[in-house]
Image (cartoon, rainbow, N blue to C red; front, side):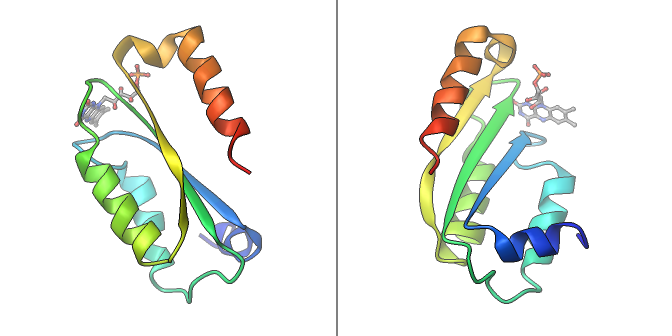
Length: 107
Ligand SMILES: Cc1cc2nc3c(=O)[nH]c(=O)nc-3n(C[C@H](O)[C@H](O)[C@H](O)COP(=O)(O)O)c2cc1C
């Protein structure tokens, strides 16, 4: 977190990316989110986006709830969208290209 805090101070956008573990973010990402609560809202931060991969489809409710409530609502951020991939999509070149296009629109 000591490396993340200065980056959060400068950042205008944060992109959360995680595999789905037990219906939500990984423990590592959840710990980092929890530590953000200890800060005042990072002053330059205005936007957020979410990237999730999973084994199965339609398992994103827990992560999206966290994202919407911990980030968008609590930190008052603009939602730049959510990208998901499951199962074999995680290794597919087409899905990778979709992800690149998703990344390009995050400005
Ligand atoms: C500890 C653990 C928990 C997981 N929990 C879920 C889950 O609740 N739902 C799901 O669809 N996939 C789950 N997965 C699968 C991962 O989300 C998936 O492996 C990851 O997105 C990476 O995809 P890949 O294995 O094809 O590289 C879990 C994987 C691990 C290791």
